[in-house]
Length: 185
Ligand code: IMP
Ligand code: MG
Image (cartoon, rainbow, N blue to C red; front, side, top):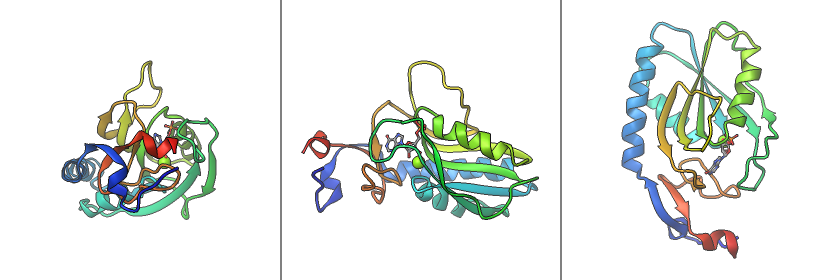
């Protein structure tokens, strides 16, 4: 992997600019504030990819809420979904009787979130909703239906704004596609 000292130099194309991300997140937050007013809400951020989205989203939310985090592994360092999901860090607090909003960076195959919905669903939440920043357009039907989606994107591997390639590029403020040289060298 050939990584530049200026990460921006490794980006072939910016798919979603920083301003577009922030504008859309503010709009999503308005919808969430409206939908969960008066409800006992906990936002579950999925580490590490969902962390930028989570912190920007909550800053726009005007209703009371709890924040909790979960870490799961799905990919290892490859760009293909393995279907193997493991809990690396569980929630700090029980979600029984609470309205749970899962905050995740991206839905690719949907396997990761499908698994999460299954295990959190068994804990007796009042409701369980997915809020995903990105949803990849795939051929065929997805079983998973998110309550909130920021952007639908083409089926390409993207980095930035929490999303990584081999743990790098999470700190870019936009969503972009890597130059092929990054993978091949
Ligand atoms: P899924 O289980 O196939 O839906 O994959 C979801 C997880 O894979 C996400 O939470 C990301 O961590 C990772 N992922 C999927 N697509 C991408 C991508 O384009 N770039 C970076 N990570 C991705
Ligand atoms: Mg992730």
